[in-house]
Image 1: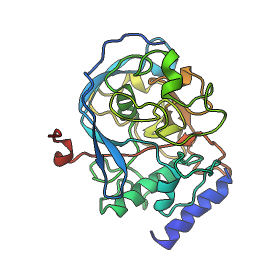
Image 2: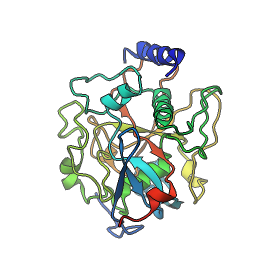
Image 3: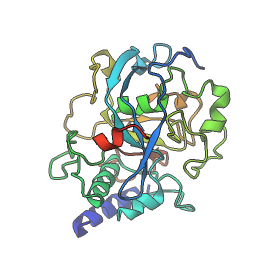
Image 4: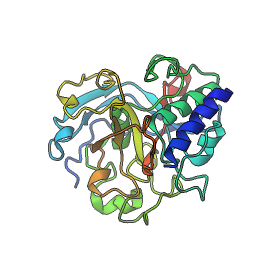
Amino acid sequence: MSQWRFFSALGLLALGLANGCDPVPSSPPAKPQSITTASGVLMIVVPAGSFQMGSNDHEADERPRHEVRLGSFLMDQFEVTHDLFVKAQLPNPSRWQDDSRKPVERVRWREAKLYCNERSLMENLTPCYDEAKPGWPCDFAANGYRLPTEAEWEYAARAGSSRLYSFGDVAKLKANSWFAANAGKRTHVVGTRKPNAWGLHDLYGNVSEWCQDIYEPDYYRSSPMHDPLGPAEGVGDAKRVMKGGSWKASASMCRASFRKGQRTGDTDACFYTDFCGFRCVRRVTPAEAAPEK
């Protein structure tokens, strides 16, 4: 990692010293396959498929419920932890630093993208984010790491289910998620709650997770069916989509369809938002997509 990029990240840190409906699945759950990347990170091969995104029964920005079809992709099995963030030579912005296996939080959107690029370089992959251009636009054709689109995130969280929570009703939330009712007002070591049907942990709690998309309340009314990438990129510090519950979230905010528009923090003098975390995705290679034998 170059010296200027480290101090750029350090500068950002200094600034911030900051119930279920239809039980019928949209796509049948497949046996999850996992891989270990060149940098030692566990990822799940999320199968291609279709699902019903959003909800007609809850918040206005979740409407209308609509069909989305996605190709296969790789997603981190766990939220990015303190140790992974520091391994990429980035300063840890987190409030709770008592255990390196906890999810990193207080992460600005730009810092999450910087981590994606650093991890790509560690594995000799092509970074997705162009740091030389304003807003660091994403090249979705690159083979490196990036933040998931909102559609990818919700599809992975649902894991073939169309319920409010992939595992069933709210009575099972404590066994599957760290949220306001059981987290004790703090984050927890990743992977200590049950995974979903595809082997992914903590999508319903612990920390909320950055997505690639700009947040637009009415986007679902015009979202394309195939591999939606979110609204067109604009100029300025637009809000970005955050998905998933967190240690401070109510049960309703942990629903798969719940979405929140969150300021990126990239231009904020202070960023003390201690529920903002993330996980990475990348393109799946033919070898990784092949069924296990």
